[in-house]
Amino acid sequence: ADVDTKFRTDQAFLTYRYAFRARERSQLGVGVGVGVLPFKFELDVLGTGSNAVTSSGVTSFTGPTASLGVYGRWLLGERWYLESDIRGIAIKVDRIKASVVEGNLAGRYFFSNRFAADLGYGISSIRLTVNPRESGKGFTGRIEYPLQHVRLGLVLTL
Image 1 (cartoon, helix red, strand yellow):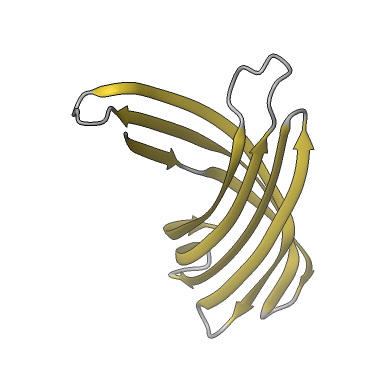
Image 2 (cartoon, helix red, strand yellow):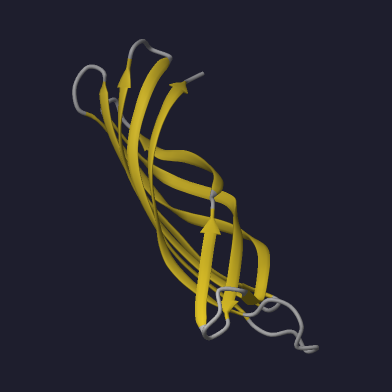
């Protein structure tokens, strides 16, 4: 038999940062992130000696995510900032056990006092374990993967 699998996911998140130490050229603080990870799994099984699909299945699952950590921001010149953060969490809710570790590095250039462009890179390590239900039905298993992203954005400070 020939087995073809596909795994797809996206990430939507929002991060709030609070500086507990703010100086003229640097900031240190805490960051809290919340988001969701929608997963989609596809499986096709081809019979031996045949090109016809003998079995096929699609399962979707959306998992919540959150993280807590620290961040730093440093002024490198008159308008350039470098910032980094690291956040993580491990949690168990009902039959779902998840851990997330996230790290980001970015540069920000201010065109004016309120408007900036942002370019950054981030990586997340995600581990999700879903234990079986008592009925034995539904999605179960373990997912572990790194998720990388590059961000380009515009920033408006108030």
